[in-house]
Amino acid sequence: MRALAPLLLLAAPALAAERAPVPRGASAERLQAALDACLKAAPASDRCFALQLARARTLLATDPAAAHTLAQAARRAVTDAHDAAEDRVAPLDFRRRNGTITPADAAALVRGEEQVRRLWIDLAEVSELLGDAALASGRIYREAAENYDSTVALLEQHGRGDADKRWRLRAKGKHAAAFTDSPSPDEGGKPAREAYDEALAAYGPADPLTVSLALTLADSHTQLGRFDAAEPLYRDARARLRDPAARLDADARIMRLLTRMDRRQEAEALGRDLLTRLAATRADSLQSARVYLDLAAVVAPEEGLPLASNALALRTQRLGEKHVDTARAQLAIATLLEALGRYAEAEPLRRTGVWALQGKLFAQHPETATAWLRYGENLLLQGKLKEAAGALRSAEFSVRDSVGEKHPQYGRVLLFTGMTQLRQGDPRSVATIERGLAIIRAGLAPTHIDRVQAEFTWGMLKLIFGDAATARSQFRAVGRAGLERAAAFADYGAAAQRELKQFSGVYALEVRAAWQLAGKNP
Image (cartoon, rainbow, N blue to C red; front, side):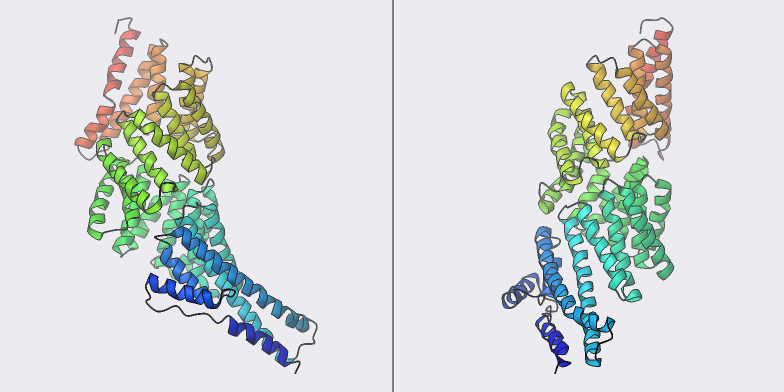
């Protein structure tokens, strides 16, 4: 009789925890009805686990917060079931280790350990879903990364080896991708490389999982500024894709890389092609919004503004006003308004956007740092010196703690801080500008637009202070950079002419500096 006790003990919970089936092909409404009925009948067990996960997945696109809440409830139920199963196994395991276990106990222990293992796998599944829901809800990076990492760890410890390898590598790729928006994007580099290398060795370069992980690794390289490593990965992965939607996504990533590399002509051509394909494929609204914003960054501001406005409308409708991606769209519109000289209109968008980013991404994130810098620049150009100085102090703290003092972005912070100090009569202004210029020169090519703007600023400063020789040298360098940038275009069309127009005033300033140097009145 005693030997039967473990069997009865294990059998009872197994029957109680028998999972309610998910209706095949059920609509969201039918799933919800089945879930409600299950929870009413068995509120304190994991019987409804499969239904909870199925319903949560249907909510990811429309109500990610509800999906997250439902997944959390599923995890609590499975955790309770797991703890109870381990409690039942513990005395049997004790007898095994002490050599007092009977054959019946041993058989019961095997079944009990398998039940515990399956519950560990359930926890891995719900952890991945929690990561998906966290990202969809705008809970950027940390919560999602921790949940994906839990999935990977649970599959490594309790999975079925090769049978779960694809799932484990997919989750590891998601773990790496979650760090794209983190203050420390390098944290995603290691898992991205490990997952890609393992998939490449196991399945080859053409396998869809390997291709997906190649894109994740390329994203990691891009975030870290390793553009030369990212581009071939993007190109190779894109060439292996056959699904039109997947190709569109890969091209959108390549476009963002080209923009980061300041290859704007290539980025614009690719972006226009993407717009045509978006219209033909009726793509997801959030994917369309991302492409609108990417293209808006490289076309003329007059054309970019309606694109960015459409993106903001789509994101507000799908994600709400407080989502981080909605804030990104607001900041993109602010950038375009500033390019049109409408700084006062851009100011409230910058202010709202920077605080939204800081709330979601925290102060040490590179994106938050850039937002503070651009806000400070906006205020400076409006002559709001006190407010600009405050925003630039926030930018300095944010940039220093996110990318360090040798990054060109830190140089730009110093450049604008020095210009603000100059307007306020601060004697430290010139030294601050010099420090910033040195950092920018060390980190950016002579033709990069941020380097060009910094060199132009230094030339203007020298001209104002009467150093005509240095001013002329600066304006010559800026003019050469403008010609090189225009020469990179395939023809002397509207884009090349627009590029040259930006530099038209530089040549007049070079002549003015030459006259001043010759003792003439300009």
